[in-house]
Image 1 (tube, one colour):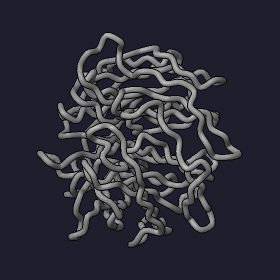
Image 2 (cartoon, helix red, strand yellow):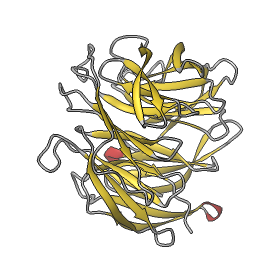
Image 3 (cartoon, rainbow, N blue to C red):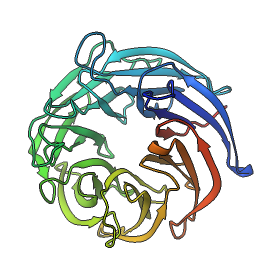
Image 4 (cartoon, helix red, strand yellow):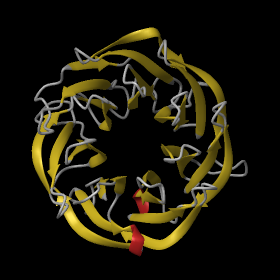
Length: 361
């Protein structure tokens, strides 16, 4: 398991652990990627032993940009070697995703924390997993909304449709989900019709998204008002229609909260969302026919500010990064009920942000 982090305190980059689920044992491998600055979002290439990290910066090589680093992974030791590092073509890159063709990487650059709009940048992936030195396409998003974090367009993440023909961008700053058509031959985006979908109300702040296992529905968690919205997805037109929005926090919760991560269990029956403030992971059951959600569990994370989490490939464990308490809490998943049970294993690591699993040699 590789874990990205903020490096503004004692962390120096990407740390790793070797996890043996059959023995309920996890061993630290230490710093394997770095020193590097603020590698806060990680993804793995679907077929190559390559990891990509977004370096969440406002300036890189003297320009208003973050960067993206590609690492080759040694499957035996977990150690990583830098393949390439490129300017991300926008400030504060917050999310990365790879097209199903495995040829293109899409970067969501959030922009400044205030009034500088973010961008979507597309990079070509080389045969060894490295990235092209310059982006193939850059799109500056537009719009704003009512909240203090919504003075400009801020793309927080993007997601491809299951067939790879469309891209949806969660524009937190403008309270929209931007809809694009994807040209697989040229690797270019063009606006779909309509160009975007407004979220349920101003100030919601869409953040992350996941498709249902049957590809019929898209689920988006709204960071600023702590909700999650279900959408129907049209394969023919590549467009979304809202179904229902529900809260991610308990009705009796009175503090400040922002939702962070969202993920679907491999069996497709449950969705998990983390709450920063309530300090919880909430479990929703998924209606496979209608796309509606119902709360079936709410579990304290055992730490502060659960930014991101990851479910292992077999759907047996969930690892939560508690960013403000410098810890990762490990839960066992009941695949029948979706429920989470603490394993008793907690990892001490500075400012963890994003875990990913790599099947070692």
